[in-house]
Length: 304
Image (cartoon, rainbow, N blue to C red; front, side, top):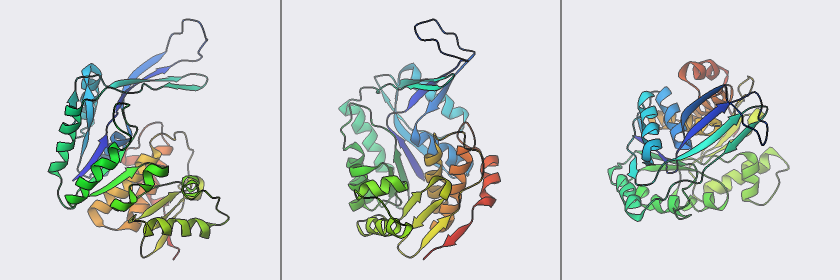
């Protein structure tokens, strides 16, 4: 089983307007509520790939109930901890330009945290936990890291979608894959890459520090996957990018879902690149038909 973790999900309130006039009453032409969260995005792609998964996290209040209802409509299995506070609402205004107002998130009690950590008791060898997204402000900054010893003790794999020092602190627990982009990878080593080889050598250092696989996304230049045995390159899909939200989540989902079923890292790169591209080419998280259009475009080359 793959478990996705979204500890601070949101109900996104999306308003469409032709124009926003500051200081005046504005009326939207269309509104909708959408369940939001990076782990939820991963679950959506896994569902499209037909890979069984369960979404974990915290929800509360009437907004939390609506979020769960929307997941049920999308047939996303979930086992969220119900909290006494209310799931946040983020406001997305689509007008002459896009404006976002993101709430901080709910108060989560120690008892609710304990209930969430009890979920980890269900893990079995071979399971994968994908942890991504922001922390609610009441959670400690090392909350994600605190989950990793138990995950590994249970024999499960994990992925934490984070950057910087928080990413480096996960390496001793041997994440299944990490996915910095080339700029984030350079920042980890406080440098600028002068060549592709410099970048790949840096990725190898992350393997030495504990990562099992390093996937480097490079937008229009495709992506690299550095494994203990080989280095692979996937070309970028061709299309008009209209959406950057969720593309990285989709790439991780494609890799993890494929690896979970085949243990083939190169094929995981191919499917992950297709999922990321398909989401970038649509205004929402990609569906199977869109992924199927992009997948034949992705070719994998063995660099080393």
